[in-house]
Image (tube, rainbow, N blue to C red):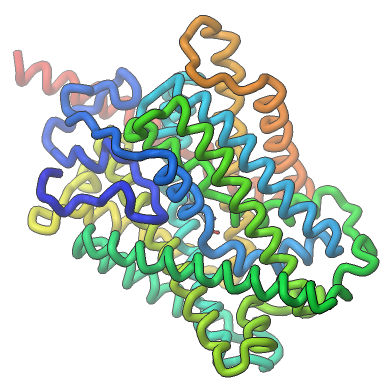
Length: 494
Ligand code: ARG
């Protein structure tokens, strides 16, 4: 955007559609029909600045946010036993890594920004790509913001209500805090990209400190012989495979963001080597951290305590850290706040890009003339996130179910596009080729993740599916308005 106030690529834990973010011209809006980003003339080339370490930090930074502090309760509830809980957390890491490796092949084969949008376009055409952008703009991004802010709310109030029994009554307060957090994030992002990115660095440090503190605590406790929680660890294991799907939803939420590096492939110095390598280092690193943090929770608390705590890290801190217990809620709240800030930032950029492509009303692609921030787009994402907090039934858990269902429909489709492209375009250059069983495995896992919860809670999944498909009429409308625009612009030029 050429004003010196643009986000640095190293701004800790977030993704953004880099090319779109740089190109802020709102004129020249005639939507292109050649597919993603083919309007090349518009763009300033991006510098290849990111090395291996930045790649790893980007992955780790986006993945760690709210999930590891808020999901453990639900993973345990749905898996029933300590043994299965730890297996689910580990398998989620494996799935995230396999998924990311498939994305590496796609990212190096189709080096366009927009990740899923570009791959789905190449594999299955414009409608599939549109439905993805529709779903991510209306469901995925706003629900990410809402979910993370709910975790923020839970951690902010927890210290004040320790030992007060039922947390259900506090849900309105949690929601109010979440709504306030969304408002602050909107304000900061609308005011200045520079503030937003500075804030991000502080929060990234906070979350790393929190994770390291918890891991050390766990290791010390294990060393002291507190291993009761691990005895008989498969007793009460959930035997309904559909319900275990919900455990995966919650675990996978903590890993979400594994595809993040694909949004900046163009900015990697050596993408063919660094893209897969960052994934193979970054994701196992997060997996080990997550499993160790879970072991820490279990070394301090009983499974029953974990299942009833809405802010498990606070419960742990209260038990052990004495007068220093206040640091955990503060660090975790900062971590979640940073994650929400990241999601809101990229959500705004996505709305902006979709509007510029002609998929959403044009005013959403407007940029604040002085502040150079995509204000209408940010506001759009925040309003939907606020609305998501309104229904009585909406909570961290229910929103995760909606989010994960929709997300895995598209992760599955994207990896299917990889398989389809192998068949359809066997000779296209693939600088990084993933072993064939991997995408097959990821597609099968996605099918499980879509079907199992559908079977257990058909209504929720059905609504979600209906929502995704309701993009079709909008697609048709946008096609018609595109052709009208084209005709009128041709008439004007003529
Ligand atoms: N894994 C993150 C968390 O635990 C959520 C990431 C949301 N997704 C994203 N692409 N930013 O809070």
